[in-house]
Image 1: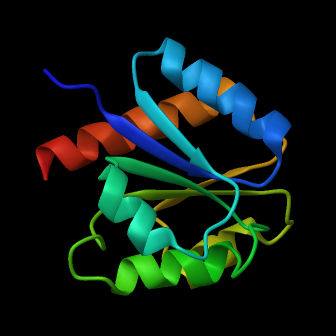
Image 2 (image 1 turned 45 degrees about the vertical axis):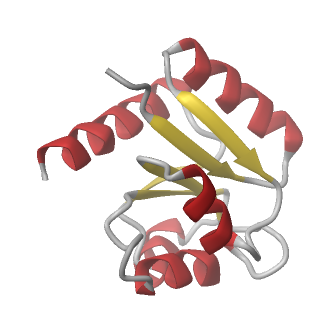
Length: 125
């Protein structure tokens, strides 16, 4: 069975490193990006099973990047987990049409559970 792929968009390198290490150790193939302006190209190249999206990502921001993805016929079904330190994360995730969200600072176990949930959701749908 091939490794499940996770694409992470976040411009905070310390967060990227931690998430990368944790998910990689769990057996996922992980790719990271510090910008989201070419999200369609990156998703097309990597074909992820789940995307983790930061709200404050250069250049276009997480809401716009997620909207672009969800408007694309080939990629709209890829689950997006939104992460941000904003107090209104639920409304931001909803506006972006993200599938789920985890507030920053997040519990790594919580993030792992959400990733697993959406990996299984994608397999069964």
